[in-house]
Length: 221
Image 1 (spheres, rainbow, N blue to C red):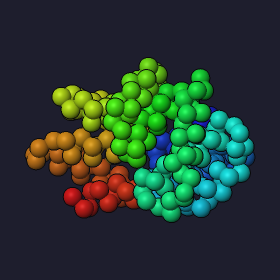
Image 2: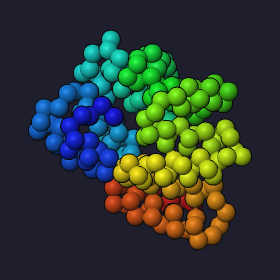
Image 3: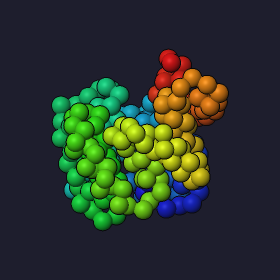
Image 4: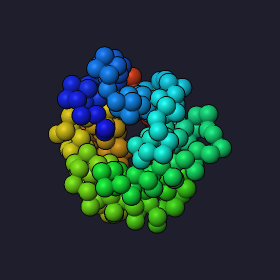
């Protein structure tokens, strides 16, 4: 997250993307912050893809932040199979590699390269190596993402990783991410009360915040 305004950041954590965007515009937040909010809104709610792309296009294409945010939006297109562009994979790779080389974004860059390797390139060996490098970062939100994805690569520790991810996100107060962690943990559990309670709690958040892909995962299962 690039936002440093505590009120914008709080709305962001709660999944209130529209209100966060309104406040960011009101306070003339940096273009990078507004672009990241729009990118997250598209990722979680499936809304305003074109507005997010316009915001990305307005950034300095030579800057690390500009390349990183362009990569994140292009990755969402690839992941959701939404209006994929011929250069999306190249944009993702260049942007995430730029982030991985930047001291401020290195951990996130390595994490995203790992997810890109896993989900798009289908290269689990490269993915695990990126995740292991990302784990050196002490950002607890980043760690919640890394251990979630490491659960695939270390199946013997999968439940521990998924619980760790859920507890970190809940403690930090990130509601969309916490709901997603609930679903990931529930999907790894056998049928029973814990699985049902996790899915029910995640559904409440997904419905309230209109988390489109998470709602799909919950209603299709």
